[in-house]
Amino acid sequence: MQKLFHRASTTLGALLLLLALWALAAAVVRLPALPTPLTAFAVFFRELPGELGRHLLVSSYRVAAGICLAVATAIPVGLTCRNPAVDRVLSPLIYLIYPVPKIVFLPVVMVFLGLGDGAKILLITLVLFFQILLPVRDGARHIPQALIASVTSLGAGRGALLRHVIWPAVLPEVLTALRIASGTAIAVLFFAETIASQEGLGYYLLDAWTRYAYPELYAGIIAMGLLGFLIYVILEWLERRLCAWKYL
Image 1 (spheres, rainbow, N blue to C red):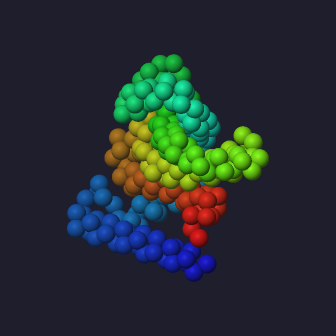
Image 2 (cartoon, rainbow, N blue to C red):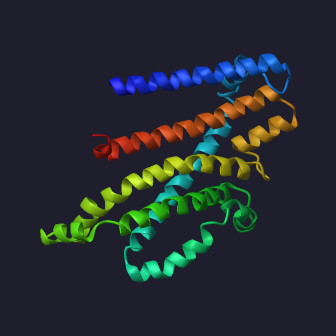
């Protein structure tokens, strides 16, 4: 409880410092393009029950769906790389595809899936897929064979080996990779929602920018920042809950 209180207090302190710097910058600049925090948050809370809230829910759904699909596909593929034959086939493909920015596939994805949710979710999935695949593959491959042999000698089958040895070894890597990649997923979502879209926070931000509605623009930025922060906090909570041995 004391650690939780300390973490909450330090986070609150960092937030207050950020708001103070924002207010100072707004007071110095004195331009409509940089409203004060009070103005931006007033618009945020005013718009949240209406249009802003709807766009926030759409973006949250897209990010959550992309994360779930990436986890559901990357983990099985990464675990199969423990097989040397499979790894010899997949490693060159991963080596070639991983460095390519996945955002460049957006036009191709939209050609096949249209302009709806499917294209945006798939793009997020592509970005997160490789961010999860590599830690799972490396974590599974680097499990000491002596450990596997000792557990197998005690009568553990493939299911027990996966549950009690392999999965605990790769799970922290998966959650850490997701926390690191969550910011990238939000950035990709913003870019995808600004192209031929009428829903989502990316569209809301672009619409406010084109109308020079700067308070609404900053309200949208606050909403997108809140979405990224909540995803990060949820993933960190899951890591502490599912990987408690790391924090002993």
